[in-house]
Image 1 (cartoon, rainbow, N blue to C red):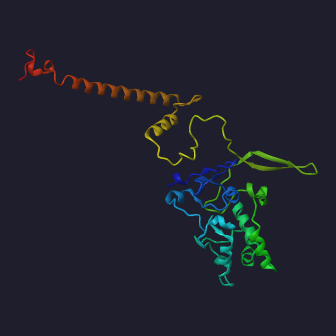
Image 2: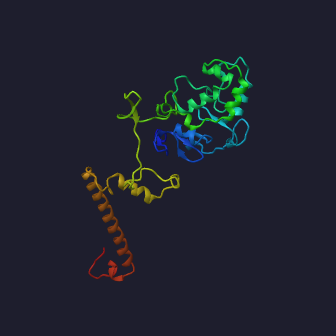
Image 3: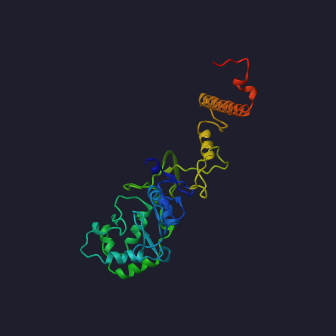
Amino acid sequence: MFFYRKMGLCKCPKRRITNQFCYEHRVNVCEVCMVTKHTACTVQSYLKWLQDCDYDSLCTLCNKDLSSKSVVRLTCYHVFHWNCLDHYARKLPSTTAPAGYKCPTCQEPLFPKTNLVSPVGDVLRQKLAGVNWARVGLGLPLLSEEVDAVSNVDTQAVTPLDLSLDMINNSLTNSKDAIVYVEDPNTTINRTDNSGQQQSRRGYQTVDTPTTPPSVDVYDNDDNKYKRKSALYWFNRWLKSVGFGRRHSTGHFYQRYCMAAVLFIIVLTTIVVIFSKLGKIATADDSSFDEHNNPNIKIN
């Protein structure tokens, strides 16, 4: 089970490590891509996709296509039409505590945690800040003209440009299926302000796409990633894993020699057995090889 929980790499240029999986495009996605490229896609953990890959791109509150209206994604990654979620929350009693607002699908808390640093959480806070029923849960003062605020939030979609650099690069915390950023303490991003002073910020390690094809297939193509692999494919991968096929390997010489010797013995034994069987078949009907017809052989 732990093997399936292993992280994957997002397809974005940053190659962020994530365990979230887009059901529609069948790729790993980070939270930045959720709010920029996969706004209306069904996204859950890769483990859940392995358990049940069935999905529909419908809003569970109105049973209509998610792409037809403006949507909002909760911190549990379930997506709803903003109008449907707003109507759902307004039907609750006015005395409902903030903890009483839950996701209609999984019953997780609707409001993001105050210490949660997440692009999805930041976009959700921007959406919820336009209605009074949500401002109470966010700890914000009530609006005087709620009708105008609701119309503005509904018509103006949050664009990716609204995300600040800190929002995108900060690591996520307090989430079971959080995206993990790999920090490189030796990498810094220096920027100079108007006064000439430089401020250093910690950068994040990125994985560059190789210009030449690697000797070992690290990433499968999207087309044949989920196809059934043949026995020859797995045998080829096993040979590469033990050292065969590496052009510039510096170690594991003894392991390679041992594996080569074992393979040679297996092949030699197979050849001997095959030719022995073929020899017996060729002489089975030859009377000269029958010991009962040979006068020089006495059988008691």
